[in-house]
Amino acid sequence: MVPQWIIEKKRDGQVLEADEIREFIEGYTAGRIPDYQMAAMAMAIYFKGMTPGEIAALTDTMLHSGDVIDTSAIALPKVDKHSTGGIGDKVSIILAPLAAAAGVAVPMISGRGLGITGGTLDKLGSIPRFRTDLTEKRFIEIIQDCGFSMMGQTGDVAPADKKLYALRDVTATVPSIPLITASIMCKKLAEGIDSLVLDVKWGRGAFMKSVAAARELAESMVRVGQAMGKNITAYITSMNQPLGRTVGNSLEIIESMECLKGKHLDGDLMQVTLKLTAEMLVLGGKAKDEAEAHGIMRGLLESGKAFECFKRMTELQGGDPAALDDYSKLPGASIVRDYVAPAGGVVARVDADGIGRASLVLGGGRQKTDDGIDPGVGLSNLAKVGQAVSAGERLATLHANDPAKLEQALAYVEEAFSIAPEAPAPEPLVVERIGR
Ligand code: URA
Image: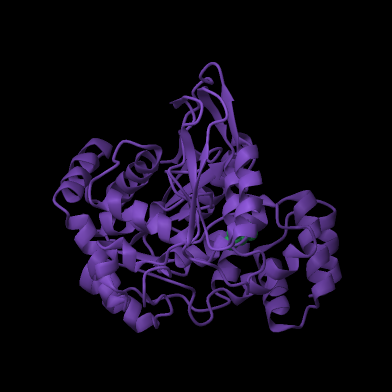
C-alpha cells in the first residue's frame, strides 16, 4: 500500500476499502506511517466524510489495535452507558449501581475531566482512598460481586485512538463525525459489552452545539454499534443548563448519594438518569418496557438497595464507605459564598458553559491532561431555568479554597445567569431516542 494513494482517494471523495483503512491505521499505530500522512488523512476525512461501512471498518481496526476486556466470566447481560459529556453530569454515578441492583452487569470504563467537562473518575476520586486503577482481573471480580465497577483505562486499550486523538487535537480535526464515532465506540466496545446506551448531549455546555449535530453523531454511533452486533440506543438530551444542582467533584458525589438514597427524584438529573437506566434494563432483558423498568427502579431507590450497591462497590475499590453517609469526610472548601439574584423575576438562563468555566477556575477541572484538581471546590444550590426568584434570593453557592479564584469564578457566575420578567418557553430535556 502506498499511503499517499489512499490519502488521495479520500481527498477525492472516494470510498476506501476496509483493507485500505486497516492497513493505514495499523501502519500509523506501528509508526510505519508518519504523523504528517495521518494528519492529511484525518483532514481528508474531515472534509469528505466516510460511509457507515468505512466508519465501521475504522472503529473495528481501532478497537483491535489494543486489549479488549474478556468479560466472558460474567454470566449477566453486560450493559453500559456513555455520555458525550456535560456540566454537572453525574448520571453514571447513580445509573451504574441502580442498573446493577436491577440485575445487569455494568463494566464501566470512565475518563478524567478535561476543560469545562467533568469526568466520572475525578468525581469518584474525591471519595477518600477510592481506587480507579484496577487490574482487569480485579475489575471482573468486583462486577461479579456487586454487579458493577468503574475504573480508568487499563493497559493498552485502543492505542490507535490514543495516538490519533492527540494528533487530531493539534491538527483541527477533532470535530469530525466519522472520527468522533470511531474514537468513542472503539473504547466502549473494548469493555466487552453486549449492549450500550448513549447519551448524546447538545447545547451550550456540550460538544455538539445543535440538536442536528447531536443527531448526526448519535445516528452514526448507533449504526456502528449495530454493525458490530451490539444492542444500542442513543438519547439526545439537553446540556444548556447544568444537570442537577451541583458542579464540582465532592459536591457531585454528595448530590449523587442523595439521589441514590431516594431524595430529589423529580429534578432534571433524575429524569435523565431514570430514562437512560430504564433503557439499560430493557436492553439487558430485565424489564419488558420503560414502565416496568420505572417500577423496578423506584423500588431499588426507596429500599436503599441501589445505594447499598454503590457502597459495596466503594468498599471493594478501597474507598471509605463512611464518607457516603458522613459527607464531612469528603474534601471540602474553606470559603463558601452565596451568589444572589440582582433582581426579582424568573431564571431565564443558567449557562452551562459559564458555570463549567466557574468550576474550572475554582480549581475543580483541568486545562491540560496532567493538571491537578481540587476535589472540594465547585458550585451547589444552582437555581434552575423557570424558577421564580426574588431580589436577593440565592442563585448559587460557590465553594472555593482561594479568594482570588473565587473572584474570578464569581465573574463567570454573574455572566451565566439571566433573570427575566417572564418564564422562557420550556425546552425538552430528553429530545429524542434513536435506535430500534
Ligand atoms: N471523545 C472521544 O473519546 N473522542 C472524540 O473524538 C471526541 C470525544
